[in-house]
Every structure is written in C-alpha cells, then in structure tokens.
Image (cartoon, rainbow, N blue to C red; front, top):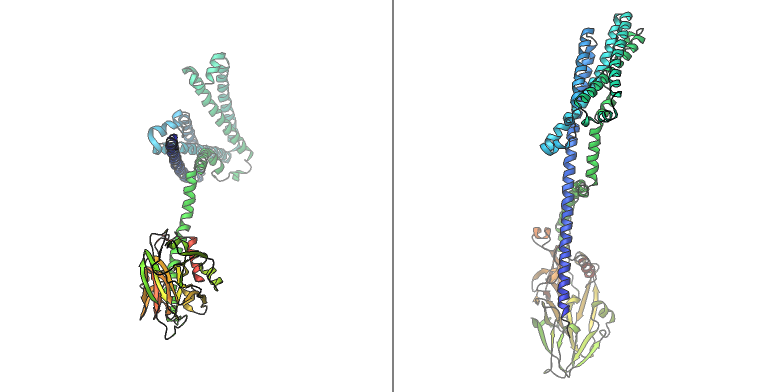
Length: 568
C-alpha cells in the first residue's frame, strides 16, 4: 500500500528546498551587488583624492619655482623693501592662521561632501591643502627674508647689527612680558573657568578673546624669537658676509605639510585592494589583453593549419594511388542488397542456416526455434574479440515458414538492411554497423583484419586497418535513419563519417572536399571517401544521436579517432 503522507512530505520538501535555493540566490545577488557598489565607491574615492593630489603637486611645483625666483631677486632689494615684504608675509600668515582656525576650513569636512557632492568636496579638499602649502612656503620665505635682512644689516655695519639685535631682544622681551601677563590672567581664573578655558566650545566671549590674545602673542613671541636668533646668527657671521646661502625650498617640510593627503590616498588604495570585486576586475583587466592575443593566435593558427591541410596535404592524398584491398574473382557475383533498410527485418531461415545476432537486435523468434549463445566465431577468435562479435545469440529454425524479426530495441533512429556477400566476394566493413550474420550452420566464416600501413590514404584518413568479411554470408547492417547500398560504376564520393563499408574489389581513395569555406568553418571534413567500381555502403544520417558542438564530444571524439586508426 502507498502512504498518504509520502506525496505531502515530498511536496513540502520540494517547496522548502525551492525557498532555500531562491533565498541563496537572493543573498548571493545582494553580496555581488554590494561588492560591485563597494568597488565603484572605492574607485571613485581613489580617483577623487588622486586628482586632488595631482592638482596640489602641480600647485606646489609652480609655487616653489615662483618663490625661488622671488628670493633670488630679493637679494638685490634694499633693506626697506625687504622690511616691507617681511611685514606683508607676517600679515598673510596671520590671515591664513585665522582662516585655518575656523571649523569650516577643515579639508576633509563631511558636511561639504553631503551638501555639495564629490566635486565640491574635492574643491574644498584642494583649497585646504593649498592653504597648508602656502603657509609653509610663506614660513620658509619669512625665514629667508629675516636672514636676508640681517645679512643686509651686516653689510651696513656691525654696530647697526648689534643695535638691531638689542631692539629685537627688547621687542621679544616686551612681547614675552605681555604673554606672561595674559598667562597670569588665566592662572588667576577659578577651577570652573579654567575648565571652560580648556574647552573652546564652552568659553565665554571674554575667555575666547583672552585665548585669542594668548594665541596671537604666542605666535608673535615665536616670530620675535626667530628674528632674534637670526640676527644673532648674522652677527656671528659678520666676518664672512658671503656666507648667506641661496634660497632653496625645503621639500621635506612641504611633504610634511601635505602628508595627510598622501595618507588619504593610501587609505583609498587599501580600501580598493580589499574589495573582492575590484581585485577580480583588476585581474581581468590585466589578463584581458593576453587572453585576447591568445584567442586571436588560436583562431589564426587554426585557420593556418586548416589551410595547410586543405591546400597541401589533401592534394597529395588526391593524387595518391587508390587502395584496392582484394580484387574479386572474375566469376564472382556482385555484393547485393537483399532487403532495403527498415525499422525491422523479417528473416526466413533455411533448415541448414543459422543466424548469429547481437541480443539487443533480436526482437522475436519462433517458440520452437533453437537458441544458444555463440561466445566467439569459430576459427576467428582474435577477429571476434577485436571486432565485437562476441556473445552472439545463435538462432536456428525448422523451416522457411518460421520467421525471425530483427529490430533495435533501444534506438528509435536505427534501421536494418540485409546485404548478401556471394562466394568469391568480400566486404570491408565498419564493425559498428554489423549486428548479425546469416550463414550455413557449421560452415566456417572468413573474418579477418587487413593492415595497410604503406597507403597515404590510410594515414590521412587515420584508418590503417580494415575489417573484412568474405562470402558466402548475409549480413544484417544497421545505420541511423537507414542504410544505403550503392554501386560505384564511376567514381563516387561520400562523407567519411557516413561510410559503413565497401566491396574489396572497389578502388578506395580519398578526395578533397569542396569548397574551402565550409571546411574552414568546421562544417565539412577535409576528405571524402571515393570509390571506383564495386559497391559501397553508407549511413543515411551518421551524426544522429552524437553529441553536438565543438567541445561536445570531448574525450569521446578523441577515443573515436584512436579507434578509427585501428579500424573500429
């Protein structure tokens, strides 16, 4: 009895597995989409920061070259003009410092990206790093101008240089005193106000002003100290006025000023290299030219090889002497078609005859018919083993009124024809076509192999050995959609894959297929079988049931070629 729950459980399991499969596909698709989006985002980010880096590098080069030229010209300026430039540099540095202190001036500000998009973000990023470069170049210019100023003072007089040193010292002390006064004001604040002073966002307006004054005085104090040290150094070099070196931009300090931009580039590259989709795309991009080149070489090489076979080797085969396996006796009757191919064949056996047939092709036989298994063909052990005529079913009937029916049991395209080989005649045959033999009981069957190693046709067609059956015997031959037996009074050509056999008195050769283009496209073979005299047998649709496509046959095609070499 069948269980009522089995169909329900089977349907439930099927739908459960279907849901799991659909979910797996959706998850995999989402992962792929996310990976691709991540790769595109990382690539866009890297392209953006690389573009900013290129712009900053160009600006840096131009600004450094301009500053070097101006400092070379500044050596010829009078002291008053140098002082004027120093004051202008101080003013510009103060302006840039005030602008840099603003939170909106951050070059990596996220609100800029969210509000203005990538283009606005790139512009703000470039503007911020240009400001850093400008501050650093101005600082280097200021240092050189101060040295140049001291240098000019030294040229005028040591006394003036000494006085200037005292003035700078007093200026430094005055600024430092004011700075200390402001710091004492901070120290006098209570604990709560001190905590507010440490947090810019919590400062009162007065505290904000006090912090600004301290910052400005600190900057002035540092500059005054730098000027004092430069003047003192100039005094020590008074004896060697020519010691002032030519101006040169300090590249390391410029690198340090834009080091954060290089860090952003490195982060973007690392994010892109970590993305699987980006790595696969990069690998494909690198391998694609080589793969395309290999493909083109393969196509060109295949066409060249086919051209050599078609225009060089095939004509050699055509001009070669025909192969004749065994001339027939003059008195021998020709090989004849006893029954045209059909899905089934009805055979009436004489009392002295027996049928040797492959078990799969024996459709029906009389109940009283004698049946047995013929392991091998008597006297032809090796030929039976190598041709596949082993384990045949032997059928004998009591008279012509008892008929045997042959038909393929598992192939709807197969048809069977009956061909009679009279005494003195022989037939070269493909073993795959032979499904049965009708001969006199007890009479030896002449079945053997013929090698033809010296024939050019045999080598070019990869058929060095021929399976030959001599009469008298009647053969049951099978082919796809029919077996055709045709006389070759003149020369006839047929596709090699269709050839099932030919009489040994026929002149067998090969001829080049025409035209060239179908052979080049793989739609036609290089050579056709050519027969002169006798008869030849061929399959109506030899490719039916075989795997299609260029790679469809795979190892099966290689195996068929090797077997054809030895006659199978």
